[in-house]
Image (tube, rainbow, N blue to C red; front, side, top):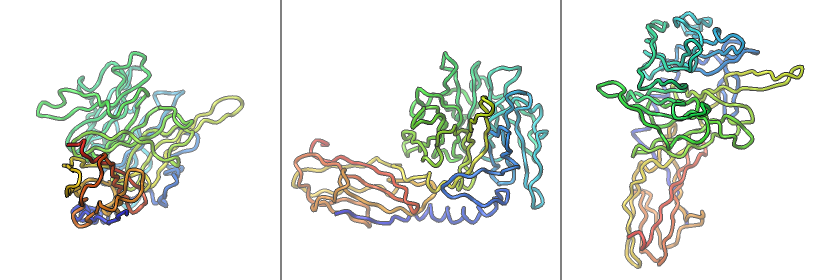
Length: 398
């Protein structure tokens, strides 16, 4: 038979309760929040009809929003704007907050809110990554990052973790200059001294922009894979307890359509995903490009995933066995309560001689199979999102 058991992660629950209380500070321009269908964000304020709005970032305290605007016909007007929540209202958009604010892209606040990272092209060069101190709603002393990060090729998307680790996209290994990959650099006492290409997250397609969770537990990637009749789409990957990344999974079709979805950002309270969606329409025989910023609830995005899969499992025919699953077998970014279901690999009921102990999350019994069997553990959160882990057991494992 199948077994279902709710697992309450007490420590995570206590942190989440406090976080939900703090989330009331965030003021999303006073707009009605979306559910699982994306809506245009800040229509007429941030997303302006006929304008190419590209990418958004929100400070950790929720009081500053920086967003990019592109002008194909006038690259000097491609820049980053800022609005601030002051004295109970949002300010008008301002681009003077950042010195020499032209040909600037990909704004992203650092995890403390005291830094603003962005990409910049100087004299029509490929974009490099820059950083400015962010103080009193001003970006101060902007400077390009070290040469270990910046190359002669394009550097674009980026994100910094609380640990100081920097993730970014770069074309440095691509001779055709068409396809970027994701790189990682760990902060040490000497700063950023080396970089590593993250093959787990890369593909043969162009990875251009990304959003990195400040806790470094998930990353959302924009990649041009031409899947499902679409172009640029958004994918999510999670970091496991051992430090590896799961295979990037395409987000649902409410988010990824036939348009181009790019420049992901998740709100500091983890409740909303923001992204740019580019539309191409025809007017008098010409292609007309338009891009707005959308937002959507993350409740259909974050799923339980296999986090700690280091399990000691030994069985022998006609002998008693017990297999203890770790209580952090699964992790869910935004849910503290999971419903566990245990079945055979094909979703059929467990063999009658296999029992599941809900108090200890353990399988036990007397092993009656002479051939290996695969058992499937599924974790489901309160939004109905599921993740699965499979374990193969049998004499061949010994």
